[in-house]
Length: 505
Image (cartoon, rainbow, N blue to C red; front, side, top):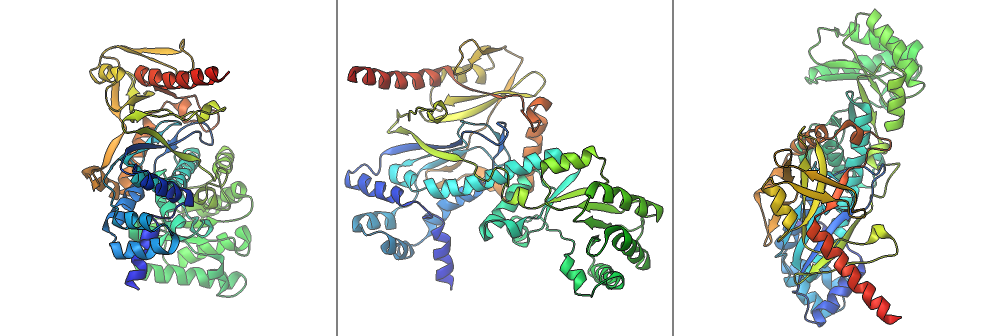
């Protein structure tokens, strides 16, 4: 069994598309497998054309640890069953990751077309990471970004993520819960996520729990009494009763009030107590239940609203002045229901220190060449003003803003759209961090263990965005500019290809 578990873990590394190994076979036959390659992972758009929330870096780096710590015997058992080229099998069996991984940290706000992760490594090492890396990042960034939308719609009311049963499999449920927490959810329901990430899980009760006590008013009351009694004996801090199994207003809320009072729960209770409504007109029912609770002297009782909620329904409930203390959101977050395919891509941008570019009839698909890094510029009010993608090595714009000098940044496609950032009126921060160097993890990787710290970082970043850039509909467009040196490099490569096309004519 131990061997099977190890092999299953290693399968995450080679959870790949066949073509990456077909290409690797050719690279080895051409003796080019050790050429230094640089690949960028980035995305082209989000649901609202605003920002995305970074999540998944920890799991990407974990792939490297798994690859480097798996024995040659275990690797051979896998590769010999799926690859017929013996020389390729021998190379892969002995291969360890010796390159570098640069990335934005988890909880960072990222924008389209700026590198979220950069892999610099020998060609085959970088190539085979494409699918497993995208598999991790597309899932987690979709969910973290959707959680951000939902929690921003709900603010200042908290959101609990409890969509594990709707997630697309075990791994999706666990890592998706982590992403939802980073994206702003105040609580979650997943036990394995608690075990793995150390964030306590919470839960109320299901309708089936109440139904096991029978049908009707007295059966529900017995269910409530038993729940309160035994949860208190086990020192549980939260007592939330689900009140819509039979009838919310004529049975459920009345039973809840009776059960709380019969068991000595009132506003002097040190923990959290209240009700959950999971069906019907949530705005109307919540107001009526609030009246009933207040009239019974249970003014500290919380109201938890659930039932296929998303950011639009939450905004509507708030506009109707629904009485709610926390929203429970399931599949809208767990599968990023309205935008399930995040669309991150993984593109080569440099080979042996020579920049390369991909052209396309669609301008959005033209890649930015070269080994790059990302900086965020903040205005004199401390608000994020522009992101600048620079060359990682020598870059004249980077030299200017890192030394605090006045400099001009221009929009890539419109030379007339420019901003002059004057000395003393801005600050800057490097978003790109080093997580793996020469195959070894750095101290930055250790910081990813604390998921709540990543959530805190996300919330701090959100505070540094203007309100116009945080709105859910048609957010004010945030500037992501290329440095002047990177822009010149990009268009010199485009011009070179254009000249070749013209020569063909």
